[in-house]
Length: 482
Image 1 (cartoon, helix red, strand yellow):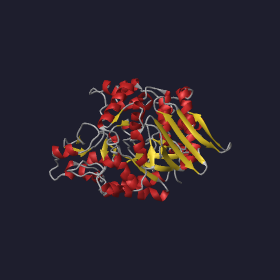
Image 2 (cartoon, one colour; image 1 turned 90 degrees about the vertical axis):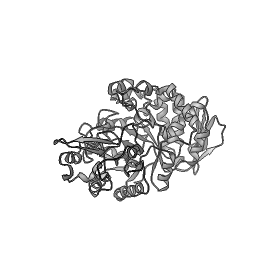
Image 3 (cartoon, helix red, strand yellow; image 1 turned 45 degrees about the vertical axis):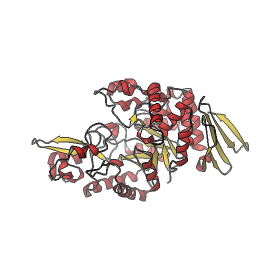
Image 4 (cartoon, helix red, strand yellow; image 1 turned 60 degrees about the vertical axis):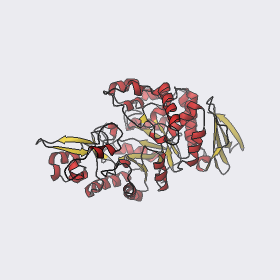
């Protein structure tokens, strides 16, 4: 049941068509030869964050469909689904019972009340300031019960996402059952969302604390592995974290690649990218775009501060200046670790540059994932951001079937699909990777297995992208422009 080494699509259950039934149609109609897997973003009942504040993992939100719809997709494509390790919804039965009954609730031990964390129920401003949060606010929420009493509860992300106490036997009892049930679906991988925020200890930054984090990952792995399911720990931070995850034998993400590719294409130099490709984990999932933004913290020390600043300035100039326009207090656009922008807009909608970027991704070691907006070379959705006041929605447009039919006719989408089909089906990508010698303003990457060989060559000044490969039928090397 191992994952196929083919491109995977990242998609919401209602973003390519209105529900899972229409999504399945789109996958079969347009993508059956281009992808081997699908990361289906959360389809559970949820109270916020477009599915990432789950009420339960036992149900599919009826607006999207049923478990049968999920299972039918999973029978045809490698299915990756999400498990939110760090938190559960404020509106879940567990937290609502705790909200109503307080310490008398059977689920009280699942949550991190300040009364539980500190003898006097208070945590110093100094300790709170140490905590690594993604938005400029303290990591707790205040709840007020019917009797007027107030209580502070640990809450790292949105106020609808209440942190779980993984030292609690009750938490592990509840989540163990969920994990086993999710592993009994056709899913081949479960992404462990925000797991690095699940290690809480006062006096620390409460982020990826060792050795606790390894004990938690081992526990999670233990309950999915009997079903031949892999786990994919998700963390946005310095590349050394991904090296550690890989060294422990887990799949990991290459979140450094998106900004490195932009730097490479903006400034016509392959030096930093080549250095990263020489040391990056091999058991990894690669991305250029996801449902979140383009990572900044992930490339620290891979780019110098000056190189990173130049790239961010270029990103503002070319496509992401919306983060400055929509930066007022009414907009939820305050992520400190990423830039909200579609990848196509980040490259000024330059089709040749965009295809070059995807070619680099597809030749990078690992299994590539393509976000659904990137699949259709989508541009920044300014109207949606103005409507929702959420900066991340700039890259979350929902496409109707008619829109998809139209977008599929765009030349750049046709070029991308042909490239995806080559990457998903050519045998050389199961072999050995090499960085070939080339001038700094070019890049040459190759894969070889037996007689199969594929060589990528990109001119970083013109973005002309060519692939040479061994044609088994003709018995010769042949070349095509992407």
